[in-house]
Amino acid sequence: SAQPTTSEYLAGRRVVVTAGGTREAIDPVRFIGNRSSGKQGYAVAREAARRGAQVTLISTVDTPAPEGCDLVPVESAEQLREAVLSAGGDVIVMAAAVADFRPATPAASKIKKGYGADDPDAPVIELVRNPDILADLVAARGGERTPYIVGFAAETGDADGDVLTHAREKLARKGCDLLVANEVGDGVTFGQDDSTVYLLRPGTDEVVTVGPASKDDIAAAIWDITRVGLSRRI
Ligand code: CTP
Ligand code: CA
Image (cartoon, helix red, strand yellow):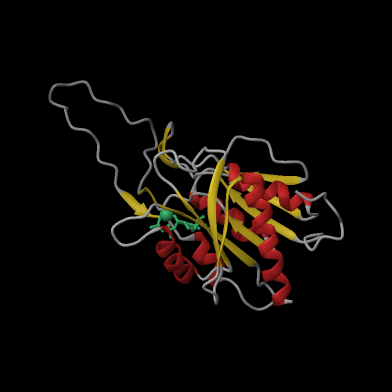
């Protein structure tokens, strides 16, 4: 990909990227998590820094930030929400796999198995919905703070439609400026090095297909298309 240059459109812009899967506490030693590796988010952050942006990487993953990026470590969706809402990005990329639900009341101490014959039941963990951070970011826009917002969609096709059908619906529902949709399931994408993504924008049926490509090349494609979107708005 291109050499870093200060004449790039991202020079001086504040870019906020979220990466990794959130961890939702069950008790002090256990959590509900997901298979997101955070690699795509890291690649997006790295490429933004290469293009001259001031990058904040909000991450659940125990991996050092790429050169030139500030790292904000978080675990849960609630922590990630606080961090991203206060980060103040001109461009916000929600690459994190945010848990849709969390345990309603994490136990204050480690849940014990129970050894008695009269104690055979497994615990039931009640879940509650997490806030939809991407939707909150879109709702908070307006006035002088109108960040360009990029969402991700990990989709499997199902009886209701294929990956692109679900992605189009998600773009409409979320109201973001760009949706990066990829197909997941059975070892596809999560943790893999090459994948295919579809870039969808509001107001056009045109879909840009990228791949099979490395996460670095996908990151470059995301910043290329974001450049067009940003320049149209200014
Ligand atoms: N997202 C978010 N907050 C949540 C859930 C998701 O900000 N509580 C963001 C993700 O970071 C991603 C986008 O929303 O950028 C889409 O996530 P996805 O899980 O694909 O969509 P959902 O709206 O959660 O729908 P579903 O899981 O039912 O497909
Ligand atoms: Ca979800």
